[in-house]
Amino acid sequence: MLNVDRVHTYYGDSHVLHGLSLKLDAGRIVAILGRNGMGKTTLIRTVAGLTPPRDGDVLLRGRSLRGQPSFAIAQAGIALVPQGRRIFRSLTVRENLLLPTSMLSRPRAGRWTLDGVLEEFPQLAERIDNLGGALSGGEQQMLAVGRALMANPDTVLMDEPSEGLSPRLVLQVGEIMRRLREHGLAVMLVEQNLALAMSVADYIYVLSSGQFVFEGTPNQLSQSPEILDEHLGVSRRKASA
Ligand SMILES: Nc1ncnc2c1ncn2[C@@H]1O[C@H](COP(=O)(O)OP(=O)(O)OP(=O)(O)O)[C@@H](O)[C@H]1O
Image (tube, protein in one colour):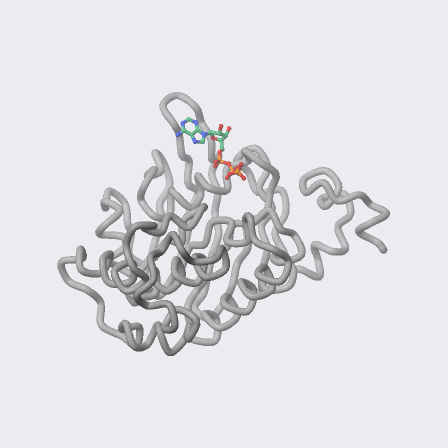
């Protein structure tokens, strides 16, 4: 589905991503872990076309996205659930869901109509005429995911969806991701929450200073105390407990 091929991404002269490659298939969740400032959001921005790579390429279903603006990438089937959710606080839930797709010139058809999204998230249906700003953090996260689904993507990029949520709501976010996978979507998850990533991801990459220092299954990561310790801040004693 998605193939990131040796991307180098810069902010001005600052070289942030150093030749990253990864693969993501349909019906799979890949998590990108790493401490603050290691380049996780930059990787998401690179794939979404917001900060295009200066070198290397991103391919969707084998087709290069090189030089494509972010709206064309969205149109091609990559949806972003941004850090901080970025819902419109002064618009209703319905307006939040309908607005982004109304801006696509050729909306993709599929199961994710307004009714389809409300069926998936009945809690949003109950609050359909409430303002975005009146929703709880968990509901806002659901809304951000629902809004992304409205574009009928086949790949969803999620930037720290657990940020600022209570442990109970973090579990709910994990459940939402599993359901996206069941629907056959490819999910790329950027997270600081190790437990969440370990519980949902099929495969994990650990990013440090713009380079991957580990890739493998959650089980393999749990058996790599030096990676957990050095790059994820988990003490060896805790990792083996
Ligand atoms: N717009 C920008 N202009 C210049 N440098 C930036 C910009 N955005 C991020 N950076 C730098 O790029 C590096 C990677 O940042 P990035 O936000 O991708 O990290 P991150 O792993 O997502 O961290 P966090 O978890 O804190 O969001 C950092 O050194 C950061 O200071």
